[in-house]
Image (cartoon, rainbow, N blue to C red):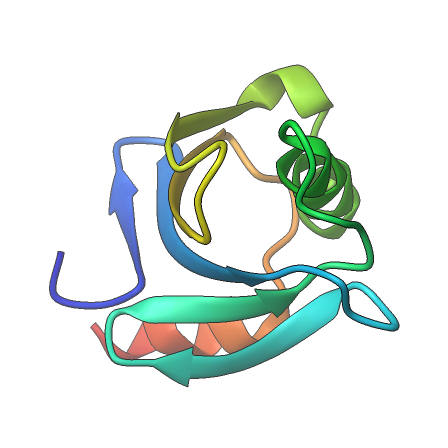
Length: 99
């Protein structure tokens, strides 16, 4: 991927750098080819990743089942696939428009 996000048909692919133990779950900045996301959960047995999926489902207005963690369930470096997102957060919409 040339960016932290790209389309694969109707599926949005995101490369994420997770930052667990944050005060609040929120989008951070773009670091290289990853989108930093602060997660308000401890990285214990995939809990932070599960919390991240819940957050992303709300932000993209999809069911949690529409989000697949391709790799990185137990790692800060992750790739997720979001099928048919109904909404794009500003940061992501802007990056996709640039392409």
